[in-house]
Amino acid sequence: MPHFTPPAPYSLEDNPNSLLDLTDLVFIDPVGTGYSAAIAPGKNGDFWGVDEDARSIKQFIKRYLTAFNRWNSPKFLFGESYGTPRTCVLTWLLHEDGVDLNGIVLQSSILDYSQVGNTIGLLPTLAADAWFHKKVTVSPPPTDLPTFMTTVENFALGPYAQAKAAYPQIDREVLKTLSEIVGIPPEVLVYWQLDPAIGGATVFLTSLLLSDGVALGIYDGRVTAVDTGIAGSVDPNSGGNDPTITAVGGVYTAMWNVYLNDELKYTSTSPFVDLNDQAFLNWNFGHIDPTGAQKGGQATLYTAGDLAAAMALNPYLKVFSANGYYDAVTPFFQTILNFESMPLVDSHAQGNLTVRNYPSGHMIYLDNDSRTAMKADLAQFYQSTRPELVEKAHLNRSRGVRRFSRTPY
Image 1: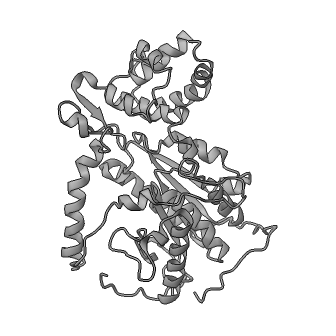
Image 2: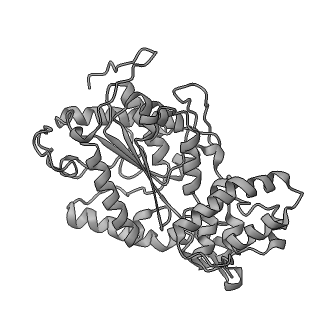
Image 3: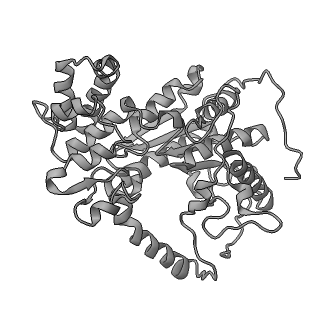
């Protein structure tokens, strides 16, 4: 592993001006990815699961806090994509062991797997794609993306949801509006049963610019790639590839190796595993949220309950949700719907949730302007968790018995 200098002991009085300068940054990959591997007699597969993975990270974090005298430090988790359900589960497990966090950041969330492909939640993203590629035919043409998205959200929840439920009856006015906002001819939408998210949106992504011979990226609808000839058989979604991933994969690989070799002065004798297909194929998605009401599986994993429980019992926990308008993998509007439906009724806890949407894709930081805006938003978010800025709140008392770890750290 790369050598690093242990952090200095920290006290809240050391630097009252900035939490950012006092927080260590530690990346934690699932065992069997990156450079990590299980030590015999353990196997990588022993850690491949929602609960198995979260429990191992919980123990790592607690050991780290002890080893480097960081128990009194600000504590944050940052999860992206699958890292968002991972963060929710981990936040709750840490709370149960007496480790309460200052805040968590959820980027490109997927907190309810049962809603993957939900057309209501996905429609605004598809409209954003059409808007970017100048396929929206609404009159007058929308010039402001956030305002246009608000209009589409209201349409999706109201007229569109009613029309879709009434199919095969066709509301011609709704059909016309749907066609105008997603850039697909009405007769095609009828053939798609008024569902532009058919096939997990892959049909839409390969159809919007069909006349140009290109397909849109599911991770970022602004990105396109050739979808004719041999490319059509392997790119973007039919073969598991995606224009966005294809565009940045080589850059990621090169820059990661430059960072390791030039900056960290670390040369590994083992390969770096960025994506482990075996881990995904053998991942245990079984999980029961703290209420016991939601039992998970690969198609039903629900971790918004873990987030709600942690927020309800820790009134100081702040949550920042970042989403990209052009991300069809974890649509921004579906994330909002998941937040609105999670079992959290306390108004103070609800007020600790901040949602920001950016004109970017799944990897928000790939867009220069969005990265700059998100950095500024995160700096403000981190600062808002400073103890002297947090409003005094009544500590909730759990009706159950709070469990504390019996481990030595």
